[in-house]
Image (cartoon, rainbow, N blue to C red; front, side):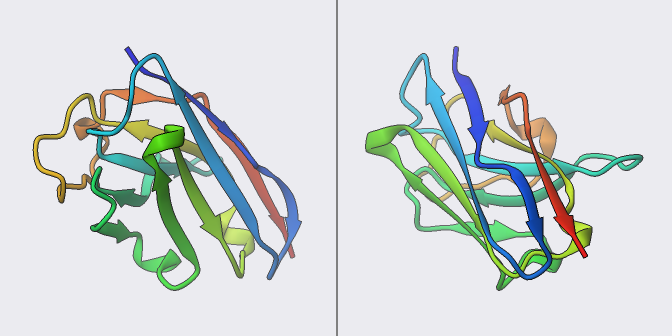
Length: 128
């Protein structure tokens, strides 16, 4: 079992930056593909970014490419999402997700159903 706890959310003006963290406990995430998703009010949860457990491969939602960066520190069992040039449309609850055990070091997932563990979410609000 893996527990995921997101932090780093808050209120920021458009153009600003935030760094989200996802701290994990219960077991190592060294062999787990990780991802970030978000859900805006009245909308379905959507994929934002994903990273392989080896850290060498990643994927992003088109609208955040060039602005967001996902990274991980396996020694700290933590995954990060650096968000720059934030826009009001980035306002959402951001969730961290983990696969139970990813076989290949280069694999990442963009679909919710590929993930086994979820955090409780952290609110990001971007004002115009």
